[in-house]
Image (tube, rainbow, N blue to C red):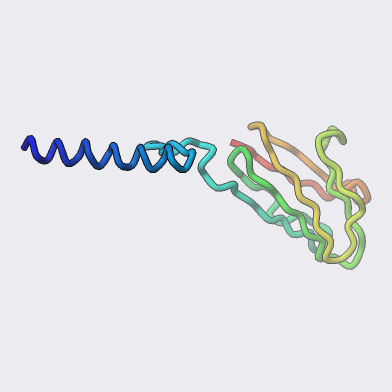
Length: 120
């Protein structure tokens, strides 16, 4: 048993020494920052956003793609949080949501086009 404990201690010492030599310290637990960022896609097609409602984790990036033959604009309800330029066919707009909440948005050119993002 003492030999196993000694071997474990020796191995831990070697790992620590290698980490220090490389200028890094190993982490035993993953932090939330280690999780890969999430992404979601919203298609603009037939004068609508699809899906009309999506739920994403904090830190996710949403990308809108205009598949219509006419321009559209992706604008937050307050008009300040995010607003794309006029998106022509196949143009994209992306925004990263850093705070939880429900974010309603619309097309500023066609105000009847509405949708929402729920960030948890």
